[in-house]
Image (tube, rainbow, N blue to C red):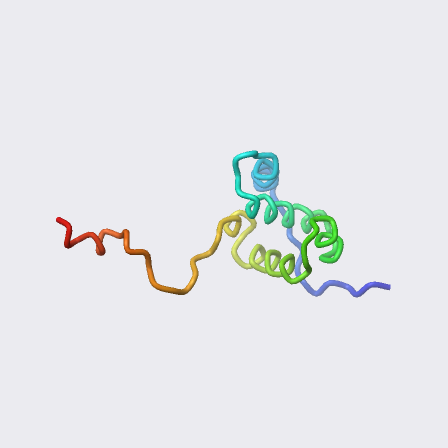
Length: 100
């Protein structure tokens, strides 16, 4: 018998599900956004992490990270990349102040 998941389930409202499905169908979205949307839709349909990873030809840690971020921040909030560490971009109003 497989292990029972300790992770909370993901309940999607109709409008969020429709938004995720439109991302999956969109031809102009990036492959990362489409994959993240597919992961969230499959998890909301109560599929296991292993089954999702197998169907999308990816690895379990990637699926688990995506699900965890979706549970923490919301299903639509993490379709785009989160800000990372590092030096901030130079093309900011503060960085251009000397040009004026």
